[in-house]
Amino acid sequence: MTDTVQTTVSVAPLFRPFPWGSGQLRNRIVMAPMTRSMSPGKVPGDDVAAYYRRRAAGGTGLIITEGTNPDHPPATAYPNVPGFYGEAGLAGWKKVVDGVHAEGGKIIPQLWHCGSYRQPGTEPDPTVPGMGPSAIVHPDHAEKGVAPKAMTQADIDEAIASYARGAVAARDLGFDGVELHGAHGYLIDQFFWERLNQRTDRYGGSLEARLTFGVELIQAVRAAVGPDFPIVLRFSQWKLGDYACKMLASAAELERFLLPLAEAGVDVFHASTRRFNDPEFDGSNLNLAGWAKRITGKPAITVGSVGLDMDMVRALFQGEAARSAGLDALLERLDHDEFDLVAVGRALLGDPAWADKVRDGREDEIVAFSPEQLATLN
Image 1 (cartoon, rainbow, N blue to C red):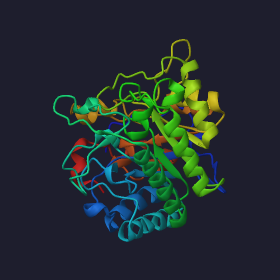
Image 2: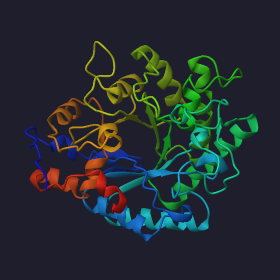
Image 3: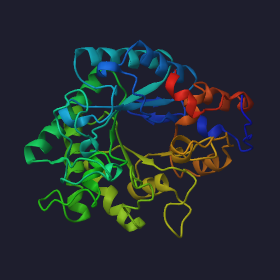
């Protein structure tokens, strides 16, 4: 149990259905993608299927899986992260999607290429180097990292093709869309970010040029999966190694950033922030998801410390204990249509039935998340 702060505003907006592809989500609650590193050999096992099925059974409307690597050899940077390729890997994901659907939920995989974050010696082939837009050490490895290989045009073409193959596999397995991880200083975001993209060809330079890789990738995925398969793009200002980063300093710059990506084929923008209730720019109370929706007219997902009083960095990396918090501020923003969907992370790790308990007014029964759970998380 936990010392839950009770919500006083009606939770009804959180439980309105929402159109999704050819169907609809049963509510506005999304399980945020969270790395687990519990898939030895890059194959998700029955325990992974059971983990996601429990969250669907607990009322979550849409599940976004942990980051899963496409088949481009340098895509992974962490041990035991699942792949989204190969006969055994895709068979494992088929069990995941079938289990979630059996509980009435929807699910999409997140395709995640780590790019220059990868360091020598990483599985599955330790001889494969990290690759990025430029041969610059990732800031999260600043003290002892090895510089990646600067990607050639052939490398870029193969990385894009790898994403497209992964998206087609997701569609063919029965997933309800796909999310492209374009945030936090990983490959797509490395091209966006001037600090890691110092190219002098058409992929580097101005903000518009740094968008080229992402635009071409989204266009390739859209062409591969067809017009009706939802594509979500996760993006962020903050980066691993630079949590205070403001890549885009104003709403005008955010517009220059988002509109080409929307036009390339993004259906939904997932705005990754550490605290959903923080205004993004001076002069407006809108958060990053709110600005994404206003600028593009596309649905937006908000995320960041939902249901908790402390952001992920302090709770997980600095060892501080996050406590449950009420949802009044979130519900007021949602009721004003600032954004459309709400991604919940650590609160759903702590209690798979978080959605049902919020819906039924049983917040005092919610089981709190603690970092100690990570080693045995189910």
